[in-house]
Image (cartoon, rainbow, N blue to C red):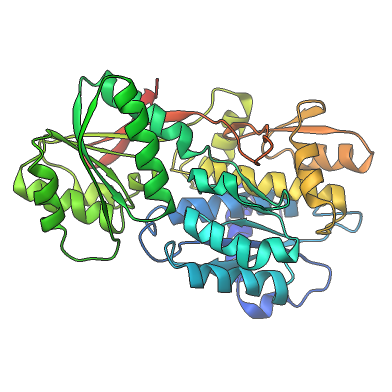
Length: 404
C-alpha cells in the first residue's frame, strides 16, 4: 500500500542513514557517493541539515529510477573529518577514494579539510569533490586538475558582503578576531580590505587558535582597541561560540558580527543579551529551484533555510546528474558536471530526477537550476552565489533579508 510522500521520504532517509554502516555496501550494483564533513567538532551543530539535505537528494534519485540503465541505487559513505583536522580529512578521503571506491565526494565542509582531502587522495585518485561549504579563497588556488568544485561562494565575496552589511548598520569601527586557518585568514583579509575601502576602520585584527577553553586574554586585547563591535570569523561550536559567550560577560562590545561559520544552532545558546548580532550566510534564491527544494525539504522535516542545506542538496544532486551522464563512472565526471550545469540545456529543477534522467539517457543536454540558484561554475570551480543577513531573536536564528 502506498504511503504519503512524507512517509515514503522519511523511510528513504532512514534507509540511507542505515546504509552508512560498512555491511551496507556489499551490493555490487550500488553507486557509492562519498560525503565528508565535520560531524563532530566546531561545526557539529551546522551538520545535521547539511547531511540530511544530501540524503534527501539521494532518496529522490533512488525513488525516481536510480543511476544508469539498470537503475543502480546510490549509497552514501560518510566520513567525519572533525572540520579542523587535516589528518582526519586526508584519512577519510583516502578510505573513500581507495577502499570504498566512491564515484565522487560531497565535501568536505571546512576549507582546510577540503584542501587536505583533495591533495591527499581526491586529486591523485582522479575523484571529483564538490564542497557545499568550503569558502576560503585558497580553495580556488588548488592545482586540482578541474576536480574540486563548490556550490557555496568564496569568502572573497562574503568578506565584501559582510563589510557592506556592517556599514549599512551604521558601524564604522570594529575589532576582528579570526580562527587561524585557511577559512579565518582568507575571510578576515577579504573583510578588512572591503571594510577599509568603504571608509571603515579595523582598530585591531588578531588570529586565535581553535580548541581553547578560555579566550579572555584575546578578548581583553581586542577590547583595548576601543572598538564597539567585535567581528568573530570562526566556528560557532568551537572558538567562535566561546569568544562570543565570554565577551558578553565583559560587556566590552555592544555588537557581535560574524559569517557563515557562526550561523548554527549553538549560536542561540551563546547569544541572548542586549548586544546586537549581525551575521551573513550564503542565501536562498528567488528562483524556481529554491521553491521546489523548500517544498521537498519541509516534507522531510528539514529546514530549507538552514545554513548550507541548499548548497549541500545542490552539490549532491548535481554530482548525481553528472554520474547519470557517465553511467556511474568516475571517468569524465568533471566534464559531465560542467555539462549538466551549463545554461545551454533544458532546465531541470530540484527533485526532477525522472525528467533529467530521461533527457540525459536520450542524449539531450540539461541545465540544473539548483536550490541555491544557478550553478555556473567558473574556471576555478566556483559559483558567485548570494548572501542573506540573519540575526538571533527570541532564541531563534531569523532572516533579516538579502545582504546588500
